[in-house]
Length: 256
Image (cartoon, rainbow, N blue to C red; front, side, top):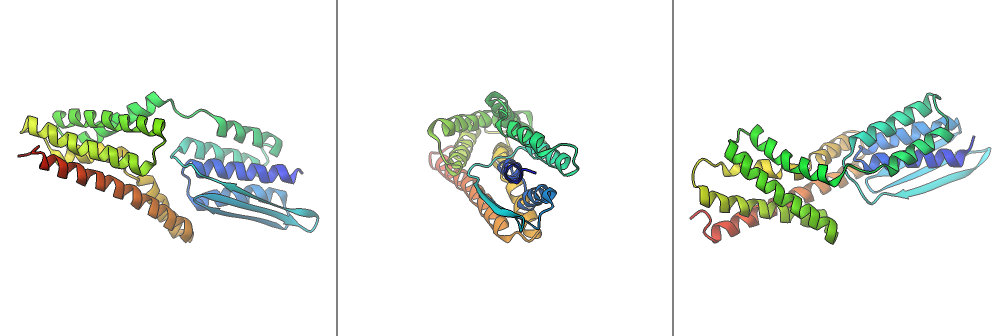
């Protein structure tokens, strides 16, 4: 067996899952299961929210240790599922390491969803959450406009390479002040709280909070704390933007 390729395969599977938003314990479990197909004496993996350390050792071979830094993270459940499927097939000997590695490499290099689809889903997520929160047709229309502002901030983020904290704060600020201005024009039949709540839903760090809880319950306190802090910073940026937008709107006389 090519043990170097086995370690590379395990790290690649873990990297894909970690980049796609998988829980730390799930990534560790997948890596260790792949390494144990070697049937060597020692198979270890240590995963945090920003990196992977893997070791494979046995009296019959020279120890192999690799470190993989993970700097970008998103949410892609399809990639998590497909990486899991490939690892299961490898562990059940339905495919070989030589077949698994190219499949994982292809999965890593697969193009993400087109930007127009991401932007459209962002806008309509704001609209549908507003409707779900018992908003009226007018509320949903205003949430649609807020969604367009959010997409503008996302485009600006890509061009200027802004940090997510800045993007969330700017988006929520524009959502709040735009809602205040539109409310001052329409006066009646509009629910400010519902519009703002529905509009910020695409930015709410729900997956990060869930993963933080799951990792903590699994005993991965370091990763759980890191993800909880990440979720807190994201939520704080949204709250700060909303607060600043409402304050400026009222100061300018938007509701007076």
